[in-house]
Length: 281
Picture 1: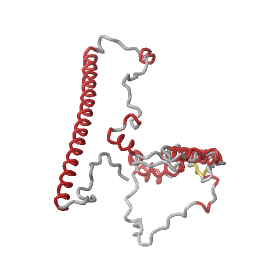
Picture 2: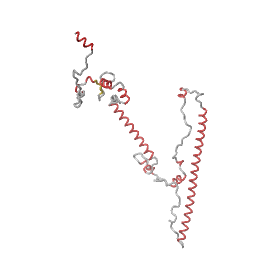
Picture 3: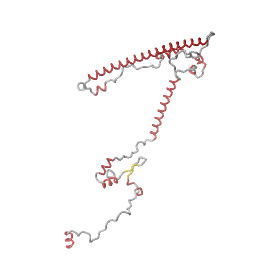
Picture 4: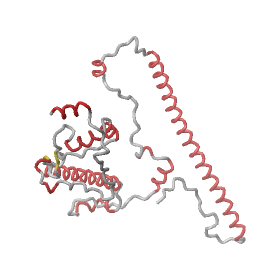
């Protein structure tokens, strides 16, 4: 529901009862002209009010900008006077120094009765007062004010406060739930995570040769049989495993070419020393 700040009167120019006159057309024309003049007067009044509000806001803004400019100038002078080479600041002095506290007064009570614009205050004063329902409050059994069932200015604040309290309760309930889950599962964070292999480690392994990489993978990084970490967090060794748990040996490929065979005639003759020793024996 929009709130009308300024209402120009009269709204209707010709909607009016006519008196008993001889020329009704002339009477309607005069009434319309008079209402137009009244509308122009109301419009000029509100235009002056708008210009006055703009002047007040501009004056306040200019004063705040001038105050900020003065603070910046003082800060600039103070910064230029500081020389870290001449003034030695100790760690103890930094810790014992009080924290900065601004002396600027923050704006408060922005939506107070005294801060209402003049047109809104005039509209509020023209409203009818609520009925005296407070006289029925002593006759209620629940202890609530009877007037709040008709009008309640604090309704939206109470609604916001209730929502904030409910959100706080939900957050505390969620924290208690996580704390209970953590207490029920104490070994939840003790499971050994799987080590992530990086390309740098692979190149470090291959630096000494492929045969050392294979033997190191079989025996483990320290030269002993590698250990196993089960899902329940226990640690076991490869020696305790059954033979069925080992992978099967690699099968020979039938398509691989056979190893070359050599005859005794094609072999090179033995060295001379070997033949002499055989002859003596």
